[in-house]
Image (cartoon, one colour):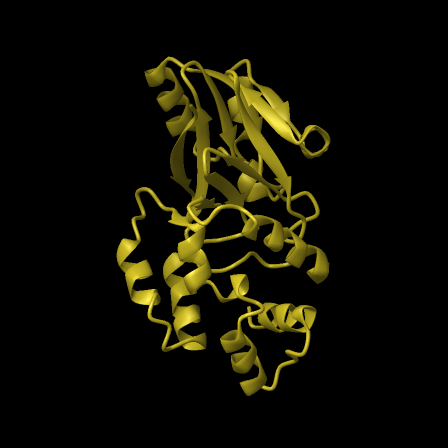
Length: 233
């Protein structure tokens, strides 16, 4: 059985320690001091250091963690080739989710998704690659996961993104309960909760289509609607 520990750092970044009885893996470990102290307190062995993507605010802790432990580094090429990570007898699935960056990946295990900047709580990441169609395919891959999947994102932008959702859908009845559940000390929402609040996960919803048309934005096809939604960022 694998467990997850969330580590806030910098202004709004979120990093993670995934661990079993003995072995651990760090994902986007910018909170180096806190992570190393936690590993020591639990008597864990850090086996791997890796990232959801290569932006420097996510890789900033790699060198310190590698220098202070015997961990190995898992880069994008290895993650993409293997498709899974073995950690103390348990397996973590690696989902290739290009869009935010070409090397973006998500990690899935035990109905838990570490989604980096591909899927935020309340929105999606910016498409820095310019490959909008590829980004949509990545989001649709995530939408194939069970609704009970817990989504752990790469940043805490919840309040900002809820304001955006309310402006777009002022009559959405789920926004208030989503806001009430907000816990900055342990931030996650289920995929089902995300779908109800996050307009980017309802690109084919009739209501979203009507909103886009009402704003004079293209909405005839799925790709039209997706690009129109991305243009609102």
